[in-house]
Length: 234
Image 1 (tube, helix red, strand yellow):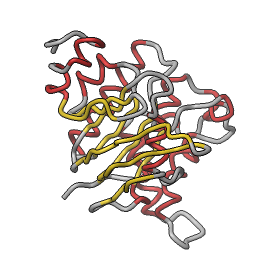
Image 2: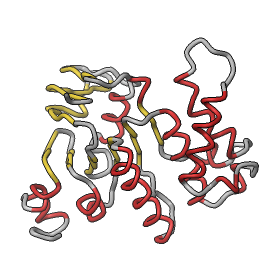
Image 3: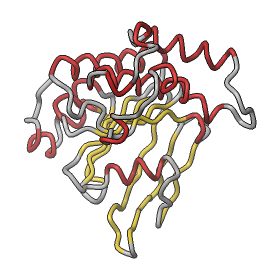
Image 4: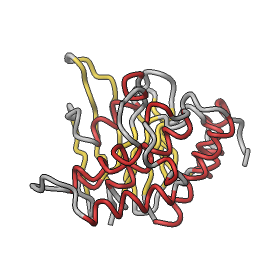
């Protein structure tokens, strides 16, 4: 059963359509990269999936997935980079949506946070102030936070923006390992189309409407791929 289905979805701002004709679905374990030029509607779609922006047409349906079971790693802002909290506090806050009416974290919440810090190699940073970390370390912390919210679906909005090449490759590899080892579905916005076709199972290419949806292998052979990454490349 599909985890997420978009049927004839469109979005508008002030009565003007900015994204239309969106039709795709993802199953458990899929890795979907959403690509397209700036302003093509990528972040609008993510807002729709998160329930932050209502579609002006069509439906976004969740199959065996609850909206509260989505882990989200947004684009970082200056305010977020300077957030004065410990690494542990930031990671643990990923459990908030799972707490229901509970007012305090329980032992299970704390264990999940600890486990995810260890998995991403940031356990030794546990008591460090988040704002003192490097960009790559901060992104690992935010990824661990998102993982605390879900084992089913991660939404990642440009997770490697501003990172150096080494940290970028490490982040891509971590995301792929989570996808493969946990069978966690991934939807990632990316400007890096070469990385998208290397790591993703599926590609959604937007340009104010859906220009392409299919497997990464199919995308490599498409006209869009010939224009953006070169046809037939592996």
